[in-house]
Image 1 (cartoon, rainbow, N blue to C red):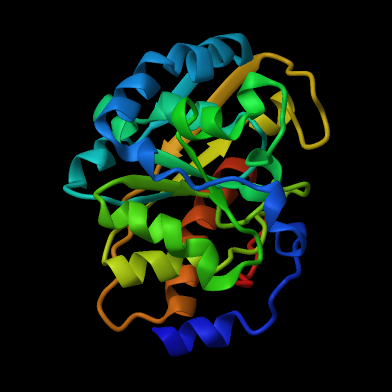
Image 2: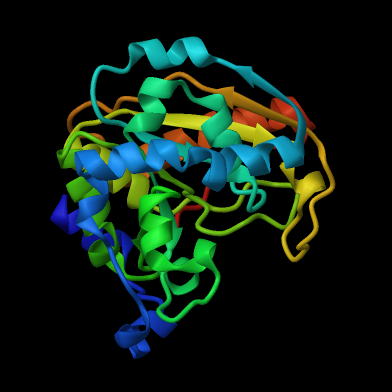
Amino acid sequence: MAGELISVRKKKVPTLYEQDESKYVGPHRWQVQGWARLARRALRWHAYDRWSQEAFTEVSVEGREHLNQLDGPCIFIGNHQSHLDTLLVMEALTEPVRRKLLFGAAQDRWFIKGRKKLILKPWYQSLAMGNFPILRGGGKRALSYADWLLKQGNHIFLFPEGTRATKGALGDFKHGVSILALENNVPVVPIYMHGLKALRPKGQKEVVPGPAYATILPPQKFAEGTSVADATSALFEAMNTEHQRRTGTPTVEPKAA
C-alpha cells in the first residue's frame, strides 16, 4: 500500500498551509468525546437545521435502506456542487449515522486563526459542525486524522473531487478515499446530490430556495488486494452512472489525481 501511495502522489501540490502553518488550527481530537457529541447534537439546529429549512423547499431522498447494511465505521462520499451539500447530507442520513459522522473540510478555508464570525471559528467548526481539517495537497499527512477517526469507530464524509464542480461533468476523483478505505477495510457509501447548484452555485453568496435531491447508493466494499487506482475508478463509475441517469451527461472516463 505504501508503494501505491508513493506512485499516485508523485507531484505534491504546494499550498498556503505549507508556507505558513501558524495561520491554521486543528484537528481537535476532543470532538469525538461524549460531551462533544452531546453538544453537537444540541447545536444541530443552529449549525444545520435552520439553514436547511431556509434553503430547501423540499428534500427527496432515495436509498436510505442501504444504510441498514452498515455495521461499523464507513466513509461517505458525495459530488461537490455547493456549500449546501453538507446540509443535504445531514437531511439524507439517519440519526444513528449522524451521531458518528464527521466532515472533512479544507483547512486553508475553514480552520484559520483569528476569524471573528462564530461559524468561522475553528472550535465551532469542530464542535458544532462536526468538521475536521483536510490539508489540501498534503499527501499522506492529509489523511492521518481521517484515518484516526475511522480507527475510533467514526464515520467520515469526504468529497473525492476535492473542490466544487463548475461544469456539467463530475470532477476527477482523488485517491484519498480509496487509500483510507483499503487501509482500514471499511466500505464507502456514495451519495449523489443534485439540485443544489441551482440554489447556490460556486461564487454566489445568496441562496435561492428550491428542492434538493439525494440518492444513497449501495456501499462499496473492496476485496483484499484491490489497487488504489481500481478502487478510485470503481467509486467514480458508481457516482458517474447516477450522474448520467440524473442529468443525461455523456460518459466521462475517470482520471484520478
